[in-house]
Image 1 (cartoon, rainbow, N blue to C red):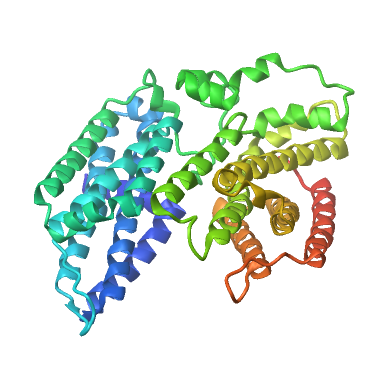
Image 2 (cartoon, rainbow, N blue to C red; image 1 turned 135 degrees about the vertical axis):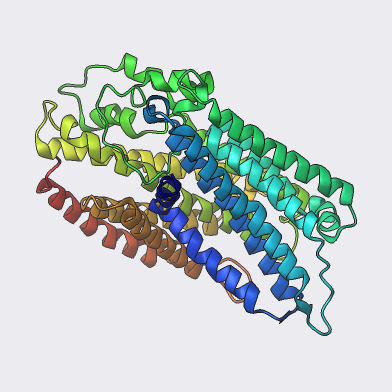
Length: 476
Protein backbone atom coordinates (compact mmCIF):
# COMPACT_ATOMS: atom_id res chain seq x y z
CA UNK A 1 0.00 0.00 0.00
CA UNK A 2 2.85 2.36 0.86
CA UNK A 3 4.49 1.59 -2.47
CA UNK A 4 1.21 2.41 -4.21
CA UNK A 5 1.12 5.92 -2.80
CA UNK A 6 4.77 6.37 -3.74
CA UNK A 7 4.04 5.31 -7.31
CA UNK A 8 1.20 7.81 -7.52
CA UNK A 9 3.48 10.57 -6.22
CA UNK A 10 6.10 9.70 -8.85
CA UNK A 11 3.58 10.35 -11.64
CA UNK A 12 3.84 14.06 -10.87
CA UNK A 13 7.49 14.05 -11.90
CA UNK A 14 6.45 13.06 -15.43
CA UNK A 15 5.32 16.62 -16.04
CA UNK A 16 8.15 18.85 -17.24
CA UNK A 17 6.41 21.78 -15.55
CA UNK A 18 6.65 19.99 -12.19
CA UNK A 19 10.32 19.19 -12.77
CA UNK A 20 11.08 22.82 -13.56
CA UNK A 21 9.06 23.90 -10.52
CA UNK A 22 10.98 21.55 -8.22
CA UNK A 23 14.35 22.82 -9.45
CA UNK A 24 13.43 26.50 -9.17
CA UNK A 25 11.72 26.06 -5.80
CA UNK A 26 14.72 24.17 -4.41
CA UNK A 27 16.93 27.10 -5.45
CA UNK A 28 14.53 29.54 -3.75
CA UNK A 29 14.42 27.52 -0.52
CA UNK A 30 18.22 27.27 -0.48
CA UNK A 31 18.45 31.05 -0.99
CA UNK A 32 16.13 31.65 1.96
CA UNK A 33 17.88 29.11 4.19
CA UNK A 34 21.37 30.52 3.56
CA UNK A 35 20.45 34.19 3.84
CA UNK A 36 21.12 35.73 7.24
CA UNK A 37 20.70 39.42 6.41
CA UNK A 38 18.84 41.10 3.55
CA UNK A 39 17.64 44.59 2.81
CA UNK A 40 14.23 45.62 1.53
CA UNK A 41 15.12 45.17 -2.14
CA UNK A 42 16.18 41.57 -1.48
CA UNK A 43 13.40 40.43 0.88
CA UNK A 44 10.60 41.68 -1.37
CA UNK A 45 11.67 39.46 -4.34
CA UNK A 46 11.87 36.52 -1.93
CA UNK A 47 8.23 36.99 -0.99
CA UNK A 48 7.07 37.57 -4.56
CA UNK A 49 8.95 34.59 -6.00
CA UNK A 50 7.78 32.38 -3.16
CA UNK A 51 4.14 33.36 -3.65
CA UNK A 52 4.43 32.78 -7.39
CA UNK A 53 5.87 29.31 -6.77
CA UNK A 54 2.95 28.40 -4.49
CA UNK A 55 0.36 29.64 -6.98
CA UNK A 56 1.85 27.72 -9.89
CA UNK A 57 2.14 24.60 -7.74
CA UNK A 58 -1.60 24.74 -7.07
CA UNK A 59 -2.30 24.79 -10.80
CA UNK A 60 0.12 21.95 -11.60
CA UNK A 61 -1.10 19.63 -8.84
CA UNK A 62 -4.78 20.27 -9.53
CA UNK A 63 -4.37 19.69 -13.26
CA UNK A 64 -2.57 16.41 -12.59
CA UNK A 65 -5.26 15.16 -10.20
CA UNK A 66 -7.97 16.21 -12.65
CA UNK A 67 -6.27 14.31 -15.48
CA UNK A 68 -6.05 11.18 -13.31
CA UNK A 69 -9.63 11.34 -12.06
CA UNK A 70 -11.20 12.26 -15.43
CA UNK A 71 -10.23 8.85 -16.75
CA UNK A 72 -12.28 5.65 -17.15
CA UNK A 73 -9.88 3.85 -14.81
CA UNK A 74 -11.03 5.96 -11.87
CA UNK A 75 -14.52 4.46 -12.24
CA UNK A 76 -13.60 0.94 -13.36
CA UNK A 77 -10.58 0.17 -11.15
CA UNK A 78 -11.41 -0.56 -7.49
CA UNK A 79 -9.64 1.77 -5.06
CA UNK A 80 -8.27 4.01 -7.81
CA UNK A 81 -9.75 7.39 -6.95
CA UNK A 82 -9.14 7.68 -3.19
CA UNK A 83 -5.33 7.22 -3.21
CA UNK A 84 -4.95 9.73 -6.04
CA UNK A 85 -7.02 12.31 -4.18
CA UNK A 86 -5.05 11.72 -0.97
CA UNK A 87 -1.66 12.05 -2.65
CA UNK A 88 -2.80 15.13 -4.57
CA UNK A 89 -4.21 16.70 -1.41
CA UNK A 90 -0.98 16.11 0.52
CA UNK A 91 1.12 17.54 -2.30
CA UNK A 92 -1.18 20.55 -2.68
CA UNK A 93 -1.01 21.27 1.06
CA UNK A 94 2.77 20.92 1.12
CA UNK A 95 3.43 23.04 -1.96
CA UNK A 96 1.04 25.86 -1.06
CA UNK A 97 0.29 26.12 2.66
CA UNK A 98 3.52 24.49 3.77
CA UNK A 99 5.82 26.36 1.40
CA UNK A 100 4.10 29.72 1.97
CA UNK A 101 4.33 29.25 5.76
CA UNK A 102 8.05 28.48 5.56
CA UNK A 103 8.73 31.47 3.30
CA UNK A 104 6.82 33.81 5.62
CA UNK A 105 8.49 32.42 8.75
CA UNK A 106 11.98 32.52 7.27
CA UNK A 107 11.55 36.00 5.82
CA UNK A 108 10.33 37.32 9.17
CA UNK A 109 13.51 36.05 10.86
CA UNK A 110 15.96 37.53 8.33
CA UNK A 111 17.62 40.64 9.67
CA UNK A 112 17.03 43.83 7.71
CA UNK A 113 19.82 45.86 6.16
CA UNK A 114 21.01 49.03 7.87
CA UNK A 115 19.52 52.21 6.46
CA UNK A 116 16.76 50.45 4.49
CA UNK A 117 13.02 50.75 5.25
CA UNK A 118 11.71 48.00 7.47
CA UNK A 119 9.66 45.23 5.85
CA UNK A 120 7.31 43.90 8.49
CA UNK A 121 5.96 40.43 7.75
CA UNK A 122 3.07 38.86 9.63
CA UNK A 123 3.18 35.19 8.48
CA UNK A 124 -0.60 34.55 8.59
CA UNK A 125 -1.24 37.63 6.44
CA UNK A 126 1.27 36.60 3.80
CA UNK A 127 -0.03 33.03 3.82
CA UNK A 128 -3.62 34.29 3.43
CA UNK A 129 -2.81 36.28 0.28
CA UNK A 130 -0.85 33.39 -1.22
CA UNK A 131 -3.55 30.84 -0.43
CA UNK A 132 -6.44 32.88 -1.85
CA UNK A 133 -4.44 33.28 -5.07
CA UNK A 134 -3.53 29.58 -5.11
CA UNK A 135 -7.17 28.59 -4.57
CA UNK A 136 -8.29 30.71 -7.53
CA UNK A 137 -5.62 29.18 -9.76
CA UNK A 138 -6.50 25.66 -8.58
CA UNK A 139 -10.16 26.13 -9.50
CA UNK A 140 -9.09 27.64 -12.81
CA UNK A 141 -6.97 24.58 -13.56
CA UNK A 142 -9.84 22.28 -12.65
CA UNK A 143 -12.72 23.99 -14.43
CA UNK A 144 -10.83 25.01 -17.59
CA UNK A 145 -13.74 27.36 -18.23
CA UNK A 146 -12.98 30.45 -20.36
CA UNK A 147 -15.40 32.76 -18.46
CA UNK A 148 -13.91 31.70 -15.14
CA UNK A 149 -10.35 32.09 -16.44
CA UNK A 150 -11.10 35.59 -17.75
CA UNK A 151 -12.66 36.60 -14.42
CA UNK A 152 -9.68 35.29 -12.44
CA UNK A 153 -7.24 37.11 -14.71
CA UNK A 154 -9.20 40.36 -14.44
CA UNK A 155 -9.38 40.10 -10.63
CA UNK A 156 -5.71 39.24 -10.51
CA UNK A 157 -4.86 42.32 -12.56
CA UNK A 158 -6.83 44.51 -10.13
CA UNK A 159 -5.21 42.74 -7.19
CA UNK A 160 -1.68 43.82 -8.22
CA UNK A 161 -2.59 47.39 -9.16
CA UNK A 162 -1.77 50.41 -7.00
CA UNK A 163 -5.43 50.69 -5.98
CA UNK A 164 -5.11 47.39 -4.06
CA UNK A 165 -1.62 48.03 -2.69
CA UNK A 166 -2.74 49.50 0.69
CA UNK A 167 -4.95 46.50 1.47
CA UNK A 168 -2.21 44.05 0.47
CA UNK A 169 0.39 45.67 2.69
CA UNK A 170 -2.01 45.96 5.60
CA UNK A 171 -2.76 42.25 5.33
CA UNK A 172 0.89 41.22 5.02
CA UNK A 173 2.07 43.45 7.86
CA UNK A 174 -0.66 42.31 10.26
CA UNK A 175 -2.58 45.58 10.46
CA UNK A 176 -5.68 43.87 9.02
CA UNK A 177 -5.87 40.54 10.88
CA UNK A 178 -9.59 40.09 10.30
CA UNK A 179 -9.15 40.44 6.54
CA UNK A 180 -6.31 37.93 6.62
CA UNK A 181 -8.36 35.39 8.59
CA UNK A 182 -11.34 35.75 6.24
CA UNK A 183 -9.14 35.32 3.16
CA UNK A 184 -7.41 32.25 4.62
CA UNK A 185 -10.73 30.68 5.64
CA UNK A 186 -12.21 31.27 2.19
CA UNK A 187 -9.14 29.80 0.51
CA UNK A 188 -9.12 26.64 2.61
CA UNK A 189 -12.88 26.18 2.26
CA UNK A 190 -12.70 26.56 -1.52
CA UNK A 191 -9.87 24.00 -1.78
CA UNK A 192 -11.81 21.52 0.34
CA UNK A 193 -14.84 22.07 -1.90
CA UNK A 194 -12.63 21.55 -4.96
CA UNK A 195 -11.38 18.18 -3.71
CA UNK A 196 -14.93 17.15 -2.82
CA UNK A 197 -15.99 18.09 -6.35
CA UNK A 198 -13.23 15.95 -7.82
CA UNK A 199 -14.19 13.06 -5.57
CA UNK A 200 -17.63 13.11 -7.22
CA UNK A 201 -16.36 13.78 -10.76
CA UNK A 202 -18.10 11.75 -13.46
CA UNK A 203 -18.85 11.96 -17.17
CA UNK A 204 -22.21 13.62 -16.60
CA UNK A 205 -20.48 16.71 -15.16
CA UNK A 206 -19.63 19.38 -17.68
CA UNK A 207 -16.04 19.87 -16.57
CA UNK A 208 -15.19 16.17 -16.96
CA UNK A 209 -13.83 16.62 -20.48
CA UNK A 210 -12.19 19.97 -19.83
CA UNK A 211 -8.59 18.88 -19.49
CA UNK A 212 -5.48 21.01 -19.49
CA UNK A 213 -5.05 22.19 -23.09
CA UNK A 214 -1.32 22.67 -22.56
CA UNK A 215 -0.64 19.27 -21.03
CA UNK A 216 2.45 17.59 -22.51
CA UNK A 217 0.78 14.18 -22.36
CA UNK A 218 -0.32 13.43 -25.92
CA UNK A 219 -2.52 10.35 -25.79
CA UNK A 220 -2.99 8.30 -28.92
CA UNK A 221 -6.74 7.64 -28.89
CA UNK A 222 -9.18 5.92 -31.19
CA UNK A 223 -11.31 8.12 -33.42
CA UNK A 224 -14.33 6.94 -31.45
CA UNK A 225 -13.06 8.51 -28.24
CA UNK A 226 -15.80 10.91 -27.21
CA UNK A 227 -13.21 13.38 -25.93
CA UNK A 228 -12.13 14.02 -29.51
CA UNK A 229 -15.63 14.16 -30.98
CA UNK A 230 -16.95 17.60 -31.76
CA UNK A 231 -19.99 16.81 -29.61
CA UNK A 232 -17.68 17.01 -26.60
CA UNK A 233 -17.49 20.78 -27.10
CA UNK A 234 -21.24 20.99 -26.68
CA UNK A 235 -21.24 18.70 -23.66
CA UNK A 236 -19.00 21.02 -21.65
CA UNK A 237 -21.26 24.05 -22.11
CA UNK A 238 -22.77 26.41 -24.64
CA UNK A 239 -19.96 28.93 -24.27
CA UNK A 240 -17.27 26.42 -25.18
CA UNK A 241 -19.39 25.20 -28.08
CA UNK A 242 -19.74 28.75 -29.36
CA UNK A 243 -16.09 29.57 -28.65
CA UNK A 244 -14.70 26.58 -30.50
CA UNK A 245 -17.17 26.81 -33.35
CA UNK A 246 -17.83 23.08 -32.99
CA UNK A 247 -20.86 23.15 -35.23
CA UNK A 248 -18.94 24.46 -38.24
CA UNK A 249 -17.76 20.99 -39.23
CA UNK A 250 -21.38 19.89 -39.60
CA UNK A 251 -21.70 22.49 -42.35
CA UNK A 252 -18.41 21.75 -44.09
CA UNK A 253 -18.53 22.15 -47.86
CA UNK A 254 -17.09 19.89 -50.53
CA UNK A 255 -13.67 21.37 -51.32
CA UNK A 256 -12.49 18.75 -53.81
CA UNK A 257 -10.92 20.66 -56.68
CA UNK A 258 -11.15 23.99 -54.86
CA UNK A 259 -8.33 26.52 -54.67
CA UNK A 260 -5.44 26.24 -52.22
CA UNK A 261 -6.76 28.88 -49.84
CA UNK A 262 -10.27 27.45 -49.92
CA UNK A 263 -8.90 24.05 -48.95
CA UNK A 264 -6.66 25.67 -46.34
CA UNK A 265 -9.74 27.32 -44.86
CA UNK A 266 -11.30 23.87 -44.66
CA UNK A 267 -8.28 22.47 -42.77
CA UNK A 268 -8.45 25.37 -40.34
CA UNK A 269 -11.46 23.62 -38.88
CA UNK A 270 -8.98 21.15 -37.36
CA UNK A 271 -6.48 23.65 -35.90
CA UNK A 272 -8.30 26.96 -35.60
CA UNK A 273 -9.28 28.52 -32.28
CA UNK A 274 -12.41 29.77 -34.03
CA UNK A 275 -13.98 32.65 -32.13
CA UNK A 276 -11.31 32.49 -29.43
CA UNK A 277 -8.91 34.61 -31.50
CA UNK A 278 -10.91 37.87 -31.17
CA UNK A 279 -11.61 36.92 -27.57
CA UNK A 280 -7.88 36.64 -26.86
CA UNK A 281 -7.44 40.14 -28.24
CA UNK A 282 -10.35 41.51 -26.22
CA UNK A 283 -8.95 39.91 -23.08
CA UNK A 284 -5.54 41.52 -23.46
CA UNK A 285 -7.15 44.82 -24.40
CA UNK A 286 -9.40 44.92 -21.35
CA UNK A 287 -6.57 43.93 -19.02
CA UNK A 288 -4.28 46.64 -20.35
CA UNK A 289 -7.06 49.21 -20.26
CA UNK A 290 -7.81 48.44 -16.61
CA UNK A 291 -4.12 48.47 -15.68
CA UNK A 292 -3.53 51.75 -17.52
CA UNK A 293 -6.60 53.37 -15.97
CA UNK A 294 -6.00 52.39 -12.34
CA UNK A 295 -2.21 52.43 -12.50
CA UNK A 296 -1.82 55.59 -14.53
CA UNK A 297 0.76 53.81 -16.67
CA UNK A 298 -0.11 55.85 -19.76
CA UNK A 299 0.98 59.05 -18.07
CA UNK A 300 4.56 60.10 -17.61
CA UNK A 301 7.91 59.66 -19.28
CA UNK A 302 7.39 56.11 -20.58
CA UNK A 303 4.02 56.77 -22.19
CA UNK A 304 5.15 55.69 -25.65
CA UNK A 305 6.57 52.45 -24.33
CA UNK A 306 3.35 51.58 -22.47
CA UNK A 307 0.96 52.48 -25.27
CA UNK A 308 2.97 51.35 -28.31
CA UNK A 309 5.93 49.11 -27.51
CA UNK A 310 4.32 46.85 -24.90
CA UNK A 311 1.11 46.09 -26.88
CA UNK A 312 3.05 45.33 -30.07
CA UNK A 313 5.51 43.17 -28.10
CA UNK A 314 2.55 41.20 -26.70
CA UNK A 315 1.30 40.71 -30.24
CA UNK A 316 4.74 39.40 -31.21
CA UNK A 317 5.25 36.93 -28.37
CA UNK A 318 1.84 35.51 -27.47
CA UNK A 319 0.54 34.06 -30.81
CA UNK A 320 3.41 31.62 -31.31
CA UNK A 321 3.28 30.55 -27.66
CA UNK A 322 -0.43 29.71 -28.00
CA UNK A 323 -0.08 27.95 -31.34
CA UNK A 324 3.06 26.08 -30.28
CA UNK A 325 1.19 24.46 -27.41
CA UNK A 326 -1.62 23.09 -29.56
CA UNK A 327 -0.28 22.40 -33.04
CA UNK A 328 1.86 19.35 -32.07
CA UNK A 329 -1.38 17.45 -31.40
CA UNK A 330 -1.96 17.35 -35.15
CA UNK A 331 0.75 14.72 -35.45
CA UNK A 332 -1.64 11.93 -34.47
CA UNK A 333 -4.12 12.75 -37.23
CA UNK A 334 -1.83 13.73 -40.10
CA UNK A 335 -1.43 10.16 -41.36
CA UNK A 336 -5.19 9.65 -41.49
CA UNK A 337 -5.82 13.04 -43.09
CA UNK A 338 -3.12 12.37 -45.70
CA UNK A 339 -5.36 9.63 -47.15
CA UNK A 340 -7.69 12.28 -48.56
CA UNK A 341 -7.71 12.67 -52.36
CA UNK A 342 -4.70 14.98 -52.74
CA UNK A 343 -1.04 14.64 -53.61
CA UNK A 344 1.52 14.82 -50.82
CA UNK A 345 2.75 18.19 -52.02
CA UNK A 346 -0.78 19.55 -52.15
CA UNK A 347 -1.66 18.13 -48.73
CA UNK A 348 1.41 19.59 -46.98
CA UNK A 349 0.97 22.94 -48.73
CA UNK A 350 -2.63 23.08 -47.50
CA UNK A 351 -1.60 22.22 -43.93
CA UNK A 352 1.11 24.88 -43.97
CA UNK A 353 -1.24 27.48 -45.41
CA UNK A 354 -3.85 26.68 -42.75
CA UNK A 355 -1.29 26.97 -39.95
CA UNK A 356 0.17 30.20 -41.30
CA UNK A 357 -3.32 31.65 -41.72
CA UNK A 358 -4.19 30.75 -38.14
CA UNK A 359 -0.96 32.26 -36.77
CA UNK A 360 -1.50 35.54 -38.61
CA UNK A 361 -5.09 35.61 -37.37
CA UNK A 362 -3.84 35.25 -33.80
CA UNK A 363 -1.24 37.96 -34.38
CA UNK A 364 -3.81 40.36 -35.85
CA UNK A 365 -6.45 39.97 -33.14
CA UNK A 366 -4.05 39.97 -30.19
CA UNK A 367 -2.20 43.01 -31.54
CA UNK A 368 -5.44 44.91 -32.17
CA UNK A 369 -6.72 43.99 -28.71
CA UNK A 370 -3.47 44.98 -26.99
CA UNK A 371 -3.58 48.35 -28.79
CA UNK A 372 -7.00 49.21 -27.35
CA UNK A 373 -5.45 51.54 -24.71
CA UNK A 374 -3.62 53.34 -27.54
CA UNK A 375 -6.87 53.67 -29.48
CA UNK A 376 -8.51 55.09 -26.35
CA UNK A 377 -5.80 57.51 -25.20
CA UNK A 378 -3.62 58.32 -28.25
CA UNK A 379 -5.39 57.19 -31.46
CA UNK A 380 -3.22 59.44 -33.65
CA UNK A 381 -0.14 57.39 -32.68
CA UNK A 382 -1.44 54.35 -34.56
CA UNK A 383 -0.60 55.84 -37.96
CA UNK A 384 2.82 57.15 -36.99
CA UNK A 385 5.88 55.89 -38.85
CA UNK A 386 7.23 54.34 -35.64
CA UNK A 387 4.09 52.28 -35.00
CA UNK A 388 3.75 51.11 -38.58
CA UNK A 389 7.42 50.10 -38.78
CA UNK A 390 7.13 48.18 -35.49
CA UNK A 391 4.07 46.36 -36.78
CA UNK A 392 5.91 45.49 -39.99
CA UNK A 393 8.82 44.11 -37.95
CA UNK A 394 6.57 41.91 -35.80
CA UNK A 395 4.73 40.65 -38.88
CA UNK A 396 8.04 39.67 -40.47
CA UNK A 397 9.11 37.97 -37.23
CA UNK A 398 5.87 35.98 -37.20
CA UNK A 399 6.89 34.57 -40.57
CA UNK A 400 10.29 33.62 -39.15
CA UNK A 401 8.78 32.05 -36.03
CA UNK A 402 6.36 30.08 -38.17
CA UNK A 403 9.20 28.80 -40.35
CA UNK A 404 11.27 27.79 -37.32
CA UNK A 405 8.36 25.99 -35.69
CA UNK A 406 7.45 24.07 -38.86
CA UNK A 407 11.10 23.06 -39.23
CA UNK A 408 11.26 21.87 -35.59
CA UNK A 409 7.90 20.06 -35.61
CA UNK A 410 9.09 17.71 -38.36
CA UNK A 411 11.20 15.80 -35.82
CA UNK A 412 8.14 14.86 -33.76
CA UNK A 413 10.15 15.08 -30.56
CA UNK A 414 8.82 15.41 -27.05
CA UNK A 415 6.72 18.43 -26.27
CA UNK A 416 9.40 19.60 -23.85
CA UNK A 417 11.91 19.63 -26.74
CA UNK A 418 9.48 21.38 -29.10
CA UNK A 419 8.33 23.94 -26.55
CA UNK A 420 11.86 24.71 -25.38
CA UNK A 421 13.10 25.46 -28.90
CA UNK A 422 9.94 27.45 -29.66
CA UNK A 423 10.38 29.47 -26.47
CA UNK A 424 14.00 30.20 -27.36
CA UNK A 425 12.95 31.33 -30.84
CA UNK A 426 10.24 33.61 -29.38
CA UNK A 427 12.73 35.03 -26.87
CA UNK A 428 15.20 35.76 -29.68
CA UNK A 429 12.48 37.50 -31.69
CA UNK A 430 11.52 39.59 -28.67
CA UNK A 431 15.15 40.53 -28.04
CA UNK A 432 15.54 41.67 -31.65
CA UNK A 433 12.38 43.76 -31.36
CA UNK A 434 13.50 45.44 -28.12
CA UNK A 435 16.96 46.06 -29.55
CA UNK A 436 15.54 47.74 -32.65
CA UNK A 437 13.16 50.09 -30.84
CA UNK A 438 15.28 50.94 -27.80
CA UNK A 439 16.88 54.33 -27.36
CA UNK A 440 19.09 55.92 -24.75
CA UNK A 441 16.63 58.71 -23.85
CA UNK A 442 13.62 56.31 -23.53
CA UNK A 443 12.19 57.45 -26.86
CA UNK A 444 11.11 54.77 -29.31
CA UNK A 445 13.24 54.29 -32.39
CA UNK A 446 11.92 53.40 -35.84
CA UNK A 447 13.02 49.86 -36.77
CA UNK A 448 15.32 49.75 -39.76
CA UNK A 449 13.69 48.58 -43.02
CA UNK A 450 16.88 46.62 -43.68
CA UNK A 451 16.34 44.61 -40.51
CA UNK A 452 12.74 43.86 -41.52
CA UNK A 453 13.91 42.73 -44.95
CA UNK A 454 16.71 40.65 -43.38
CA UNK A 455 14.20 38.82 -41.17
CA UNK A 456 12.13 37.87 -44.23
CA UNK A 457 15.25 36.86 -46.17
CA UNK A 458 16.18 34.46 -43.36
CA UNK A 459 12.63 33.18 -42.89
CA UNK A 460 11.87 32.22 -46.49
CA UNK A 461 14.78 29.76 -46.99
CA UNK A 462 14.01 28.13 -43.63
CA UNK A 463 10.38 27.73 -44.65
CA UNK A 464 11.26 26.27 -48.05
CA UNK A 465 13.75 23.87 -46.46
CA UNK A 466 11.16 22.79 -43.90
CA UNK A 467 8.65 22.09 -46.68
CA UNK A 468 11.13 19.97 -48.59
CA UNK A 469 12.03 18.01 -45.48
CA UNK A 470 8.36 17.44 -44.69
CA UNK A 471 7.95 15.89 -48.15
CA UNK A 472 10.37 13.16 -47.05
CA UNK A 473 8.91 12.74 -43.56
CA UNK A 474 6.98 9.62 -42.58
CA UNK A 475 3.58 10.63 -41.21
CA UNK A 476 2.77 7.41 -39.32
